[in-house]
Length: 90
Length: 101
Image (cartoon, rainbow over all chains, first blue to last red; front, side, top):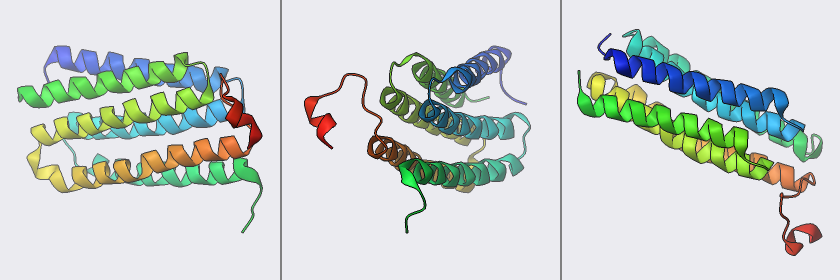
């Protein structure tokens, strides 16, 4: 752990605020598209959080986790978009 | 202890927060898509750069994550926006040309 204390506090507050705002939009979203967009954004924020976690815990293993999480989030987003677009047309 | 790395980490977290704030505050799903995608992508890239300043030996995995993010995130958002428009979701303040598609 080589980050100064003020930076740790600032990163915690900013990321906590970002996740809370995204979750609020995920819960309050008036329609399903708002929730899908919120889930997509939360996945990218979670990828950034995993990269930051690898720095805080001094372990490069979390970078692999972030990479796989990013790929899976993209596949999920494209699948949801296909469903919205209307059925399983070839 | 590296000052540029710390500054990039702070900048990236600030952009992630602003992107989530835009996601919460914007009036329309298309505005939310652009706020969430652009600001959060920039913030994540800044965080990757900050981690690279702290641990230069992780450059390969950081570059892989950044390249994947740059390739997939705009494509995913564009796919969502296109699917929503084709499914009949209209923008908040609609232009007359939007209604005829």
